[in-house]
Length: 328
Image 1 (cartoon, rainbow, N blue to C red):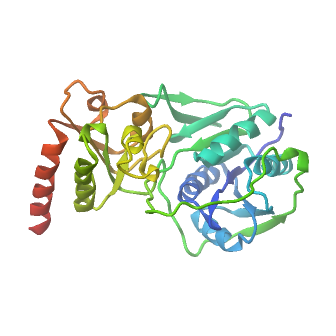
Image 2: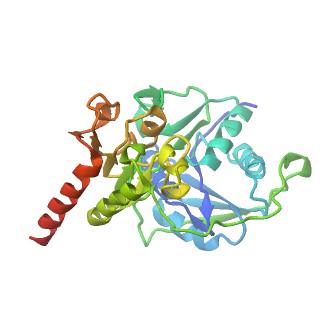
Image 3: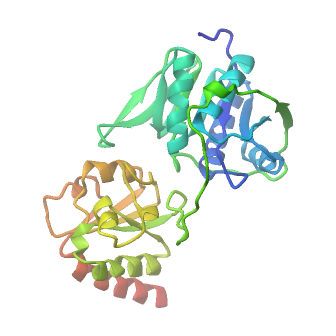
C-alpha cells in the first residue's frame, strides 16, 4: 500500500538490555536537525517491555515523541508487524534505523509493504529542497553513491558513526503507549532459548581507535603485537575473517562485511591485504594507516598513510615511538 499526506520523521530505536543502542542515538540527532529545518517532528519507536527509562535518553538525543509498543516477542517478523501498523497510523515521510543486522532484515520489508525504496548503510544525508540525498557505499564500499528515493516514506538504515551523538539533558517530550497485537501466523520463527557467549566484551562500533590484524601477522603469537599496539594507542582490537577462523581472537572482534561495520577516528590495519569484504566494514574510518609488506596490496588504495614492511617488525617500532611520545 502507498502512503499519502506523509509528514515528520520516524526513527526505529533498537535496544540492548533495555537501553537504546548508540547508533540510534546518533541518528536521532540528525533526524532532529532535518525535522526542525522543515518545521516537523521526530517520533521514535520503541518495541518491547519496560522501556520507559530508555525513552528518557531518546528524548535527550533529539526525539519529540516516543511511541512505546508493548511487545514480548523479539523476533524480527514481530517488529516488522508492529512497525508496519505504526507507519500506517502515523504516516511518516521518513523512516530511519541504525544499520544493524536486525534492522537490515527489518527495514527493506517495511519499505516493500509501502511500495517505496530502502537505502542501506547510509553515510550522509543532505537536504536539497524537499528531497533527501542519501550517500551510500556500493561495490563493497569502494564507491560512494548518492541516492534519492522519490516515493514516501523514505526508508533507510544509517551506518554507525555516520553522525555525532548529542545528548541534551534537559530535553524531554511526550510518551505514547500503543498496544498492537501480532497474529501468531506472522511469527515465522520461535525463540526457544537465548545463550549469551561468555567472553571479552568489545565495542568496535563506538571505538575512536581500532587496531586490526590479518593473516599477514603470520601466527597467533605474532597477533599479540596487534593487541599491544591497540593498548598503547588507547584503542580496541579488530581482526579480519581469516584471523578469526584461525582462532587468533574471538569472533566479536571481526571487522568487515560478515562482522562489524566501523567508522573510528583512526584505523590501523596490520598485515591486512584489503579484501573487499574487509574494506566494506572499515571504509568509513576518518584516518587509515596500513602496514603490509606487499606494496600492491589493495589496502593501500584506501589508506591515508601506508607503510610497506613486515608488520611483525614494524609494530614493535611503532609501539616504542608511541611510548616515547607519551612519556614526554
